[in-house]
Length: 323
Image (cartoon, rainbow, N blue to C red; front, side, top):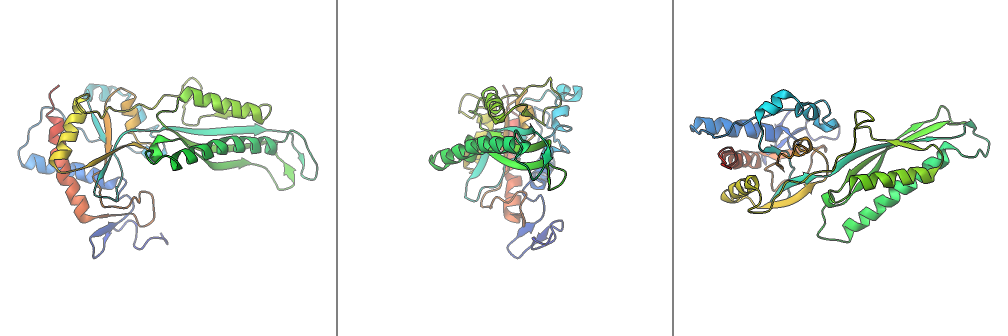
């Protein structure tokens, strides 16, 4: 709160028309734009060949395990007979609009390092801390490789490489006791070109080289019987995907220039794509700095209202598509 110019829940609008508030870019804007666009279309008397659903899920920010992941397995979802889905994107500071046709695989990883406990005054061998150091070195060395790959290739975007970040450390009882176990957490986002199985083999190798009994797990997997799934992409080549063709043409009709990218983080879209349903991530926000989850998140009123108009063209194009 103290880092905000205005109350983040007040939707304060300044003299430039910038509306400040938590969620103005992620995702209150798009939810409202969907509703307002449909309201206007209904008022104009539009009829659609296809059924349009708007879904609001409770837990996308923490992985979607109790929201979209369960919903797509529900009989109600199956009866909806979904052919295509739109989900969130984010802002673009230029005149263009960003379009996401896929996203990186979220691979949150926990590594447990057991070791010999004892008094902090001794040179103990085979300690949890020594193993932890090796684990950190392996993970962060790979991080450095990917960082250089992105830096040295101007054609790559963040979504095209794998990011690794150390996010949590747990363990210890008091300062003069060497712990019997230390745990470390990494937030890993795998590029679509990164083979999930091969990357897991890397993790196995890093843990094995760190010392005896070092184990890893993936907290987002609900149980040990689940396996990792490769991130899927929606085809955005002209003439090869009718949903893309309809979306793309609607954007052209509105003068919307698209920058196609892989989403660097994760959205509920991934659960849709896992069912081989084409899905695109799009938030109609250009001329806007990327401030999702940031202090002083804002969206200009003109950009917001323009987004409604854009959806008024996109929605009928998709809802009336004949395949």
